[in-house]
Image 1 (cartoon, one colour):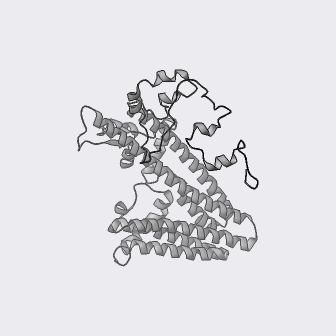
Image 2 (spheres, helix red, strand yellow; image 1 turned 45 degrees about the vertical axis):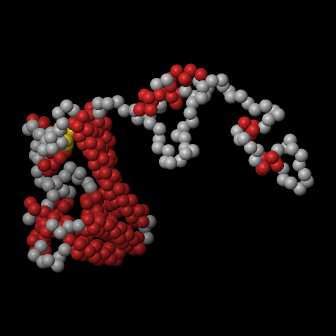
Image 3 (cartoon, rainbow, N blue to C red; image 1 turned 120 degrees about the vertical axis):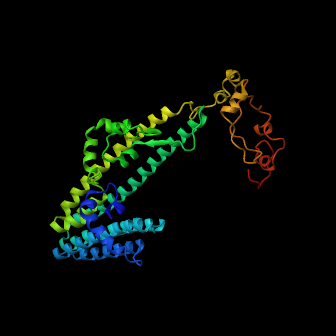
Length: 390
């Protein structure tokens, strides 16, 4: 059951304290058809509300019961995904429901735990701790989603450029020929292998490594990672799971809620900074890979040659002689069926400044063929009658 439902790598709290209980409960729950992943998700939410109720009471016995209920709630939260993978009845809505209920459970338990302690002790530090817990939990999830989105975007761009390069080459890529292979995927499939061993193995396709700089600066990271992955533990030792468990389980059990919250917040912040630093190095690897893959120079950010020839430059006409090349490199925008649309003013060459209107003729006489009635009334050179607005 563990081979079928457990992840290849997970948080150490889940591997050591959740999976042994969750897999045994799953063996029993999978026998009943009425137990669905969505119903297990709802059950985890209601058990979390029960934990929040005991946290709000604030006494030592209630804190112990609340910590136990929170652990049961988290075990159920892990079972719904395992059950969906085992029976194959998962859904997109179920994944969204699981994510939203996790945030609701953390919010209610945080307010109940810190609020209960504030009502008992009247110390404002518990209110500040509640704000810190909610903020860090939100920041961690938003940062994780955004980094995942940017990683997928970098992968998609590398795959697109590689496919275009194969299409433009003399020997086009065959349909069954493998495309780009990323080193992190190979290491995930072979947790015990080293990077050099994977390269010597001769993987078909082009291998792209977006974590080369991080491994180069921290060579010991590979050894620590391999040692942890042998037990299915991921290198991110202080994630959101450990952050929640220390606050809602360890803190109430030992009776040190504030100190446990402070230590968990500091460790989570440090690990999030490490993840950001690793992602920054990954973006530099991405820039290097894109520079190696891209063969044609890009015109992004350049200014068209004929736009250098402003009205104040008499030598601009010599720069705009080849109109065909300019049109090919910098095509004009689509006018959207607007006959009066002009993307940019056409350059004019000749004497500068332009001829100014004489004193006997107003400026508007050079621009419009007819004289509007409103301008005629406001012209001070014409006789005005009393009562009219000048």
